[in-house]
Length: 378
Ligand code: DP6
Image 1 (spheres, protein in one colour):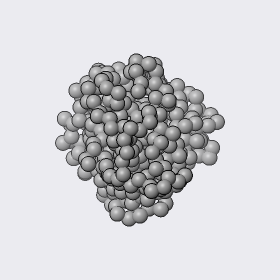
Image 2 (cartoon, rainbow, N blue to C red):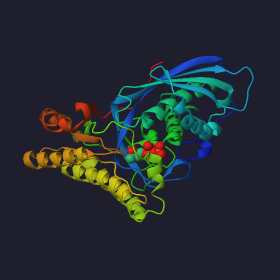
Image 3 (cartoon, protein in one colour):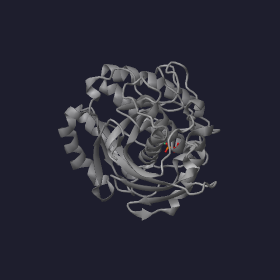
Image 4 (cartoon, protein in one colour):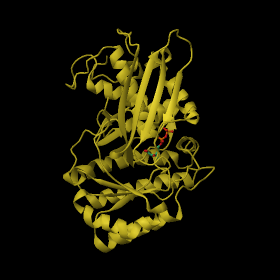
């Protein structure tokens, strides 16, 4: 296993030969979604991000996944698995998991030796427009890591740096695997703030997996609130994967990638100082830049809806009128994440209910806040 100080590479995630056999069993993990403040948009081969990103881990929006496994009587050369969402078999999810298993097989050589049943559910409504790939892929990666741990009979040491298979290594490999399923999923293993992507200003940052943000964070950001306004619950017209690919040969790509490094530097200062005005300006600019990249790619597309813009304008008016520190961010869709500090919750939630909820589809919204990461429940 890796010595901590040396630079980690993909090879560090290829396990030693397994020492134990397992016939059958099951594990369950619940893993949260996350919302990026500095956005990941654009990737290279093997799910390597073009720029660093930083996210808040969420608390309530989670995927709960149970992975049951039974050893095959005779090993064949296929991945054998079925997926169930809310108890219903989902054949249409299989290609994504097949690709995931193909990408991670070299790091988890037991995958073809078992028949798997993947049972999954989300705490948020399935068709809410909230991407379940981050929470879903991270939950599955964690389940697979729990199996690998048993095959190595490794007692995960909770002392960060001790033993051959530390808690730290477990989380790093889970994040590494999750990344190969969906980039943003690598930021869902832990909390409260996670950085992914090599950048000078963040010590230990790497393209391979997400790391806990290693610097002091001001009190203002403790328990930060994220109220998710569900503007459009339909399927996205353009998937994130297609969107990322449109950053190849994009006229503004290089500037954007550089800007993300600078914005992370600036955000580092803001997170330390607690400057909420600067925070609001930076996260809103990041959100609008993400959508500007979509609007200026070829082909171009717009994921915001008229109600997304209504909400943004009302947040700006309210902020100007009251001076309260509320801002928004967006992911690759029409929904709006309204961000604000915990101690201003009462007034801001009141504003959300009286002025913004009317722009949500069927009045639906989710009150979430910054969270600490995934949990094993079985
Ligand atoms: C806009 O992680 O969903 O939410 O790696 O292709 O699975 P894939 O993409 P995905 O992209 C998320 C992009 C984003 C910004 C972010 O979360 O940083």
